[in-house]
Length: 320
Image (cartoon, rainbow, N blue to C red):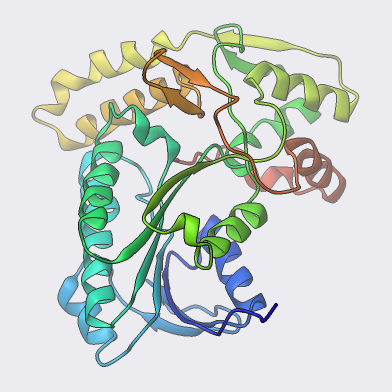
């Protein structure tokens, strides 16, 4: 079988957690990659363009006369609050879609999120609004909706190693996910460029193996570290309490409104599974959640513990 022909790829979000892996996979396969970045930085084996994705005029000037075969978006708002979400998850992606048309691209590959299935938050509605525009754009598209990332499930490694309890919401069994590693997700996304079944499709995707609950994540870490199992339960209601307390102040103080929205985001992730939602049965379906890749969460934890990198993940949150 002949190798796929080299493509000219424009990628936004190239320096992010998933974006770095996608760039590496594109380069490995011999594609010509142009990376859009906010600040001057080195992206190995890529042409780098410094620009502002949220400013359509600046973005157009930065890419004047350029042509691409595929545009890839791995961008996401940092906080997930309303103004950030509509500026980035919707607005910046809309600007990229305009660039795709101007540059003659035939395909748009979007990294979205599985949580948009049940939209209750501003960032989910912003993502869905752009997804709708993309599907009506006339370009071939693939929308990839991954489950939880390994990085987002690594924040308590250091706690466990220090002998502290693993924190769970409720009893830790009410939610589950099929987490996926960045390299496996990147490979899946780049495969979508060549897979005709992925054209004009919305694809939920998880990593290999059975769905795992937060309690099972904790039990795995205790086993791998040799520490005695200790759990501490936190009620997810704390997020609703905080949001209700802060929201009235947010009517006159924007910073408080943002904090209230962050509390609502926290409650969502504390109470919703990151799996395919079965609308007919009104429940999440682990069996219906597709799997890909080779690396499991256990593999990831073992590597983190072996190389002493766990501290880098502490406290980091990811809006999926």
